[in-house]
Length: 445
Image 1 (cartoon, one colour):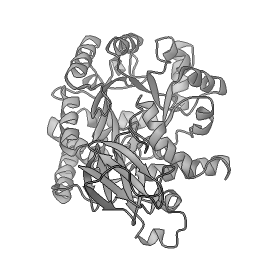
Image 2 (image 1 turned 30 degrees about the vertical axis):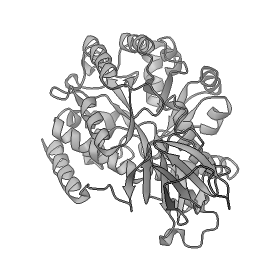
Image 3 (image 1 turned 90 degrees about the vertical axis):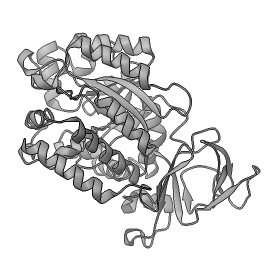
Image 4 (image 1 turned 120 degrees about the vertical axis):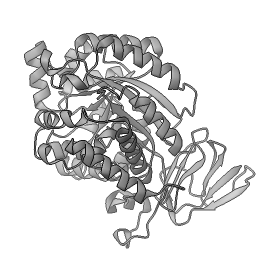
C-alpha cells in the first residue's frame, strides 16, 4: 500500500508542505505545498489537523524505574544517596513486575510521540537474568523500534562500588550474556527494529576490567556502547579520588571515547573535554527533567553540537524524571537552555532536532529521525485542538512552546501504532492497575 499523508497543518521538514508519500516501511516522496504526488497512491490520510514530526527518539531511559516513581525514601536526595535508597527495592524485582514496568514505559513513550527508544537496564537480581529478552518481546508486541542496552554492574559496595551485591554480576556472566543477546536480537539492516547495545552502568558501579572488555566486545561484534558519564560533581570527585583523573580521562583510557559511544547526561565536561568528544564523534544524551529533579546541573548541548558531538534527547529513568514523555522533554530542554543561557541560546527547532536527527546520530542511525525520501516512515502527529494551543500562529513552534504532551497518531515503519491517541487493542486502565499493584508489591516487600 502506498499512502499519501496529505497537506499537514505543519511539518518539521523542508519542501513537504503538501505531505509525504509512504510505500511500505519507507518514505518515497515529499510533496511540495499545493502539489500532488508523482507517485501513484492507494490511500490518502488527510492531515490538515495534524502537525507532523519525524518520530521522536529517546536515547536514554530505565523502563524498570516506573515501579518506583515519587518513592518517599529517595525524595529530595542527590544522586548517590538517591541510588542507595533505591537499589534494595530494585533488587526485589521479579520478571512479571519487570515486564509490566517495561510495557508501561514503552506505551507512555509511544503516546508521547516516541517511535524509537533506547533503554539502559543494568540491575540483574537473581531470577531476572533474561530482562533484555523480556523487553524485546514487549517492544515487538507494541511495534516500538528499540536499541536496548545490556547494562551491567560488577563493582558492589563490598569492593568499593555503590550498589549492593545482589544486583551485580561477574564479568564472565555479563560478557557471555551480552554476546548471546547480540546473536539473538541484534538487527544490522536499514530499518532495524531491534538492536542491542553494550552498556556498563557507570564508573562508580563498574570495574575498569568490565569497561575495557565491554569496549573490546562491542568492537568485535560491531555494536554501540553506552554508559552514564559526567552527571554529577560527586562522580567527578569519586573518579579523581579513586583513579586520579576526571571521568572522561578515565573512560578514555579504557577505550570509551569514539564514534561508537554515546554518554548519558554529559553535564560536567570542560571546554577541552567537549572538544575531544566532538573530535571523536562521541555523543551525549541530554536528560533535562531528570537533571533538574536530581539537581545534577545543566548540559551544554549547543556547545557540544558546535564542536561536532552528536546530541540526543532523553527522558532518563522514570524514577528520576518520574515520567516517560519525550515531547515534554523537548519543551523542558528548550526552557532550560533559555533560562540558563538567554533568549538567543536556542530556538524551538533546536530541541526538536536533538530529539530526532541528533538522537539518531547517537544511535548510529541514518534511516530514522528525518523526513526525507528513503528514510523510515516513522512519524509523530499532533493535533492542536486543546485549550493550551488556542491562539497559536506557527503550528510547529506551538508543539514546543505551548507544550504538547500526547500524540494523536504514531506511525512506525509504515504502520499505525497510535490511533486517536490510543494503542489499538490495549486496555490502558487494566495496564495501569496491574502495574500499580506490581509497584506496591516491589516497594513493600
